[in-house]
Image (tube, rainbow, N blue to C red; front, side, top):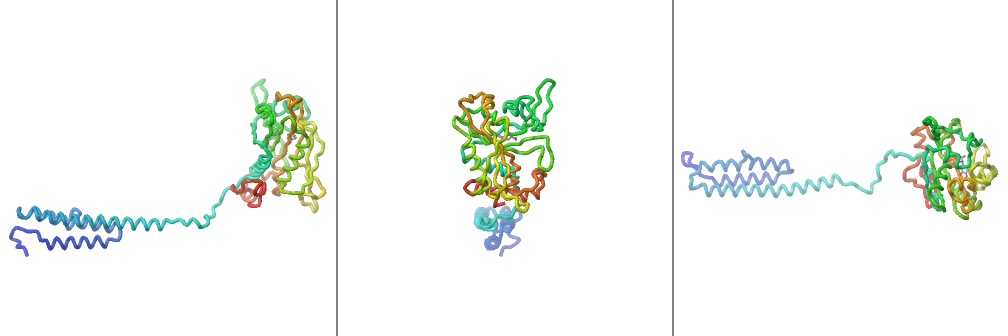
Length: 373
Ligand code: DAH
């Protein structure tokens, strides 16, 4: 072959071998890291093709052009092979990744510990759903009230003994100013509604209420729901029909005897209390036709004074109102024995008595389907 003493020439056979070796290494690269190693081995600073390039300077000048072209060609072949292999390997890597990350949407979702809705929230949603179907809309009012809305406008004149029945929490006030109260019932929202919305009015009003009372059957904070209907034609028959429909839908009973007993509330005249049928045989309370009675709510025709206190003409407008304790009817419906547990924040209790977020009350699925608990 070449004489070491002579001017070096480019050995094309050696160049071909180098290219062939590089192409073989590229073809054998199993992944992008292998391929990069093959690139460095051929085209890197000390790569086999690069080393040939370095020979150029020592060649006889008349050989350089042809040798340079040959080496460049060799380099281009290797580079093209690298590019082609890279595309293949990248496509393979992507397919492998897509296969590994495939999600089987038909698999059941993993069991996760989900939060529960408190029975009070669920019961409020149920009540609002039932009255919503009857054309009532939702209204709310503030927890902190003034004496006018909580008492005076509701026909509890100052000094009236009925005020004493409410065990009111008073907040402090500046010297000489009237003390605000924590509302003792949701009835003040009747006043706020009549003051702000022209009749006809049909509202259902759930909310927190407060009384300074605490024992086995009373908690200082509890919940009520209030209903109010005001127009020019509503009478006691409407009141009865509406509430009878409500208790049947709420307790999910087709046969549920009811009775209305005369009662007294300052803001209604006449006033009544509604009882539903039950049985207490064997010490167990069961709702339905059992020969016994259970008080469930207060109601009546809105007192003309209340209508007048809201700036409406009682000669023209009339209607009915009702109010009930939410804890009480939730306990009856869901068999919750102890009032105070509602406010214990015990997660075990909530897991047992709470509701999954998907148990959205609807009259279609059974108004108030508690079955999915
Ligand atoms: N506000 C009454 C209470 O807290 C409940 C009530 C009774 C509300 C009769 C009414 C009603 O709207 O008509 O004891």
